Structures are given as C-alpha cells and as structure tokens.
Length: 128
Image (cartoon, rainbow, N blue to C red):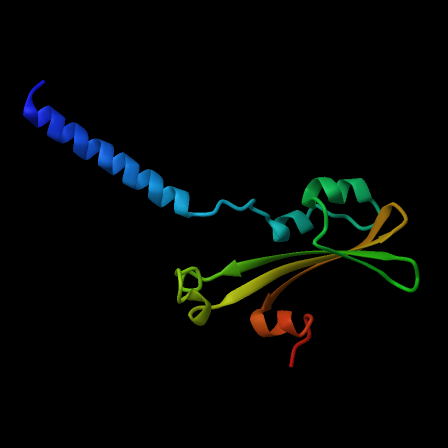
C-alpha cells in the first residue's frame, strides 16, 4: 500500500469516528405533534382508545368531582439558544404545547390545545 492511501484512510476513519461521536451526543426524543394531533379529536365521536392511539399515555390524569376525566399532554419547545449546552438554561426561552382532553365514560367531551410561555406554564396556564 502506498503512504498517501494510508494517510487518507486514517483521515477518513477519524472523520467518521468524530461524526459518530458528535451524533451520539444528541438525545433522540420521540416527536409529538400535539397541535396537529388535537385536530384529529372530535368531541362526541372520538373514543378513549382513539386518544391513546393519537397521543399515547397522558402525561397527567385528573378526575373531576363530576366523575369526568381530564387527560393532559404537554411538550416543551426550547429555542435554539436554550438548547446550548451548559449555559442554555440562562439563555433563550421555552414554550409549552398543552392539550387537555376531557372524557366522560368512553367518549371525548372536549379537546383544548394551548401554547403557553414559561410564566403561564408555571402558573398553571393562567395569564397575569
């Protein structure tokens, strides 16, 4: 083998190893599309099982005094600055997609999608 091939092969190997290491640093989280999935829900027609197919298990469940259940789905969307390693939690912003689905028996009675900023989310969805 010639020396240039060995040198080029080593460079290619190092580039592949470096790119694999960089890709490995990123966490792959399942992608949820709460806003568009909420559009699939039709109160009075969509069933509990349909909701589980569209959204999966809820992030939170509440039972109201009336016996009605509320399933809550939420997802945080971080700005590019917020995703910056080590300093990101002091930079940028976060927004939250929240879907509240009310169920009476096996049927959905209401489905509400909201996008909240950090402050609204921390206040339980209430505006100042």
